[in-house]
Amino acid sequence: MTAQSAKELGEELHELKTVVRPRVTNAIADARAHGDLKENAEYHAAREQQSFSEGRILELESKLSNAQIIDVTKMTNNGKVIFGATVGLINLDTDEEVTYRIVGHDEADIKKNLISVKSPIARALISKEEGDETEVQTPSGVVAYEISKVEYI
Image (cartoon, rainbow, N blue to C red; front, top):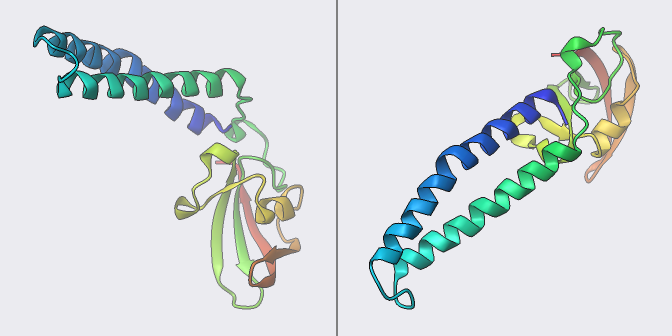
């Protein structure tokens, strides 16, 4: 996991524990005060929200405790593509340029140009260097790329 992702997950966990959990607990207490719990929609909604937030807390704690956090900004940039690197690519057929950051599976978001280290593009790029060319098998066929830049940001 990248250091940035670990920071974001830590912030979300803190928010859930210090803001959401007490708010949900208070909502359950208020709903209980209204009487009959069988027909109390507020109580059932608060319990459902509690279940969701507690599940998310457990998920985040598990991810953070099992994660190996890698901060590429503290590494010497030797021009080699590694986990966490931001890579500029030039499509050799169309001259189209794109930039991707190679991240962990849970962090991947193609809309933000964050690709999973397990993706075909990332697998083709890992351990290559700036200036190298590589081919990637895509659903539409083989695409050739040249690595235009490798940054550790």
